[in-house]
Structures are given as C-alpha cells and as structure tokens.
Image (cartoon, rainbow, N blue to C red):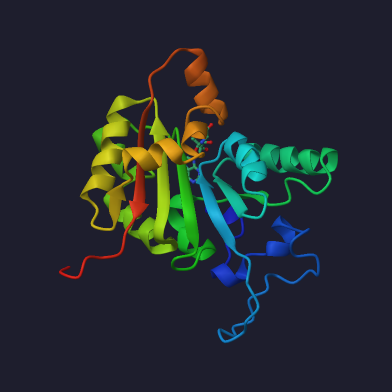
Length: 232
Ligand code: SAM
C-alpha cells in the first residue's frame, strides 16, 4: 500500500541530491531557498514519464536532452528498483552521462502535485498505460478528465503530453479526454514530424518493443498545454 513509500509534502521537499547527485552535489535537498528575487537559476525536473516501467524511454531521452532533469514514476516496487539499478550501472559505465535521469516509486494518480509545482514540466509521457477495460474501472485510467486538470496544472503553457497505446479503445479514450479539455490542443502534423521525441514513443520502451515485435498497431495522441482562452 501507499504507506510503504515516502511522499514529499511539497515539490520543495523532493530530494534532488538523492536523484541527481552530480547536479546537486552539496547534499542540499534542492536549491530553492524561497527567494523569488534571486537571480540564481533553479534547476528543476522538466520531464515526467508516468508509469515508466523498465525505463527504456528515460534511457533514450537522457542523452538526447543531457541538461534536462527527468524522472520516471512507477508504482511497482521491484520494477522501480530495477530502474534504479539500471541507472546506477549506466552512470558507472558512462562517466558524466545519465546523471539527469531518475525514478521514484509512487502512485502518480495521487501524488503528482507533491512532486511538481505549477507550470514546472515541459513534457509528460504516458506510454502504453494499463488499459482497465471495464467501464467501472475507467476511473483507474491514468488519463481522465479529472487527472488532466492536474496535468494541466503542472505543465507549462506550450508543454506537451505524449500518449501511446496498442489498445484501440484506450487510444480513443485518451484522445477524447484530451480533445475535450479546454487547456489542451492537438499538436500539428508538422510539429509531429519535427519533434525528435515522437519517434521514440513506439520504439524506446520495453512495452513498445514488445508490441512492435508482435506487429501490433499503435494509437498515439500528442497534445500541447495551451493558455486558457479569454472568454472562459
Ligand atoms: N511505459 C512503460 C512502457 O511503455 O514500457 C510501461 C508500460 S506498463 C503496461 C504500465 C506501467 O504503469 C506498469 O509498470 C505499472 O506498474 C505502472 N503504473 C500503473 N498504475 C500506476 C500509477 N498509478 N502510478 C505509477 N505507475 C503506475
């Protein structure tokens, strides 16, 4: 149950030195000191991979965006431990690299606002989430109208949500939720073509590779966080 893992009380209590020791070597929790007038750049997590599984996406993104801090959020204890060890091994084998990725065991459906401030994130990933087929279980889906309110809160304007699934019904559901939300807008075909991350959606994760091996079809929805319209 949730009592087995600690949850930060606020985003300022997330221990950055534990996750990114090379970026935060001094043991400070993070370099936020409450002083909003300070000219010091505060480095924060910008990408979140929700239900990251075995971490394939993080590993691919680490070298593509070496200066961006990213975190995977995963509910299963053993899987989270596996990802931790994977990152430790990658760091050891590649000095100076993979310092910008980490993982945390948590229930992302409950604790997103404990980890991220308003407008903090520039990308959120939902790759091959569990489908929860039955109608009565739809409320357990990681994309829902209610949870999209939370994701809109932690995403900056212009930030992007990436979703992909091999379950057609879930793909339609995620797209319909995003389409129906006033703070999200589909990215254009041109943006889809030029965004280097889009290519990774179907190929970088363990689940994506399994689907590809089996020749399965995938359904993606990529949406941008927009500012509220003046009339709303
Ligand atoms: N994204 C990975 C991939 O593409 O390989 C994993 C996909 S797997 C089908 C879904 C993952 O979401 C599982 O590892 C599961 O433990 C995790 N998960 C499910 N509900 C979650 C929640 N509420 N919070 C965090 N992770 C969750």
